[in-house]
Amino acid sequence: MATAVTVRTDATGPARERRRRTSATTVVQRVLQYVLITMLALFCLVPFAWVALSAVDAHAGPTVGAPTFSLDNFARFFSNTDTPRLLLNSLIISVSATALNLACGLLGAYALSRFRFRGRTFFMFSILLIRVIPAPATIVALYLLMVRMNLDDSYLGLILVEAAAALPVTLWLLKGTIDAIPFELEEAAWMDGSTRLGAIRRIIFPLVGPGLGAAAMLTFMAVWGDFLTPLVLLQSPDLYPLSIGLFRAFSAFNQVDWGVLAASAVIYMVPPAILYGVLRRHLLKSSLGGAIKG
Image (cartoon, rainbow, N blue to C red):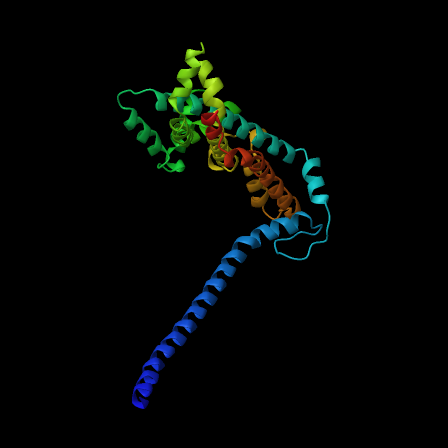
């Protein structure tokens, strides 16, 4: 019996040592993970910290530091004759392009979802292929096309290009949303005397709200943050959006107003944040279930 006990004790020794080594390895791995996550977080947060602190710093500079609190940078942003116009231009271009994109996307997605025609699948994948092509590869052709149509250096030409660039994603997104809506709901509306357009307005449009919200958010963000397209298609400084204004303010040689530049960056982030706050409720809820139950 004594020998058996001794053998059992010797057998558990290596197992206990392996558990100890495994535990030490796990601790080291976990520490390395936390260190890596902390470094990535600091890498992402430092630029935002500089923007936030410099925007309210009366003596803002290119480095991060404790600010001398002041709202003078925002006051100078709105008192300057150029910067409010840049913000207004961005709003006009982004809102108009988003509205046009959603209008065309909803009708096009309905046709692709409800009608069967030859080449429909090929067409769907063809328009999606457009998003694979890098924007710089087509910007020269777009510029020449706008010049030929006398739409260069204008709101209209830029809005058309921005809306068309985001249309493939909108079509795919809304088509999937409309596919999930039972066709019987439209048939019931037709039986009540509604036309197809009336059924779209009364049945499809209310139920496609979450998809429209997601498409609006994606389109607005793409247009709001676009820099290359307005830089090429616009030549008049009066039409420039805020994205180009930020670049011009930063690229001015020895004339960078860091405080106004940071305040402009903060204001530049406000409209997308407001849009997300407005659409978040529509993105999270699904009204389709309630319609089917009713």
